Amino acid sequence: MTTIAPSCGTGDLTTFNILHAFPEALVRGMRSSFLRDPEYHHLTQCESLDDARLNLTETDYSEVLADSSTMTPASLQKAAIQKLVTEFQYLRSQAVQPLSQFLDFITYEYMIENVILLLKGALSGRDINELIEQCHPLGMFKESTMRSIPTFENSAKGYMDLYQTVLVDTPVGPYFSLFLQESASHHGGDSRNVLEEVEIEIIKSSLIKYWIEDFHQFTQKLGGDTAKLMGDLLNVRADTNAINITLNSFGTPLNEPAMRSSDRKRLYPAVGHLYPAGTSMLVDVADEEELGRVLELFPQYSAIWNVHANGQGDKSIDDCFYERDVEMLELAFESQMHYAVFYAYVKLKEQEIRNLVWISECILQQQKDEINKFVPVFSFHAPWREMKPRR
Image 1 (cartoon, rainbow, N blue to C red):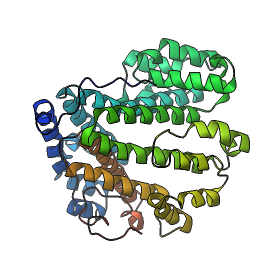
Image 2 (cartoon, rainbow, N blue to C red; image 1 turned 90 degrees about the horizontal axis):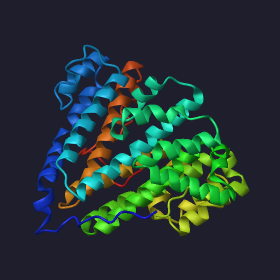
Image 3 (tube, rainbow, N blue to C red; image 1 turned 30 degrees about the vertical axis):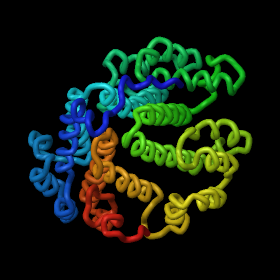
């Protein structure tokens, strides 16, 4: 798709601070709000959620937990997400172009997830109020739009009407349009007959693919350190998607020979370190052994795959991806005058929220042996900070 060119660049040493000094100072100050190693240690020693809540009152989460007399993993997650949303919206209110457009791009991912959540809920007949409650606040549309999405007719025509009457006016509408056009072209027929032939997860993977490619193109047009840092981050994100799509397709119709070279191939982003040579090889992969042989050719992924293939400890491939992401996102804070730090802040806060939910769930279920299996943010004990090789 055609990405709108930014009205101006990010600026350099002489001009960046004129436009973006205040929001950059804000987000760098927000770095101090991340939980530190001693705070994680105290949380992992808690015997109950009340103890954990008491420990969190000594952190930056004290205000969002002040009004709750009890705490559950779900309520903690909701409060932490709302805190992130409040901070992000304040940053957005202080931004001017092209930073404001960059921040909007970050929210498009959550909009896609919300649309997919509502579509899935509609197919299973769930209550609309319950679905909206589960939607991510960073990806919310107008309430009328949110309530319209699940009301489509459960048919190909209903999906098309959903796009033409509702999604066409949303920021993710162009991605949905691209999906319809590409699917119609691929199946050699009217797009009205497309959506009944695919699963919701394929729609989600397609929309995320278009978003990654669009976001990548936008950041490269910005130039400077933003293009370099965001290029690396989005390339890795694209590769992660390609690997996960391949891995999750095993045992499904997507892994059938005809589907591998058609439907699965179309889900791979056209950016990334694996693109184009690696993704071309992934098309022919039929099992984990073949996937491993492909990833062995790419040093940045061979070590991660070996952890998964050899079953080293209790670490999953997702854990390895999270560790690598945290390292790259932390490094975005080590240089100045670029936009990647805003993306890094949101994604690192997401990781911190995952950590809090994991710890609280382990406390609730009395699984103390599992409680330390999380990826801390800005930890002095991180392997790359201690200059130790990763397992």
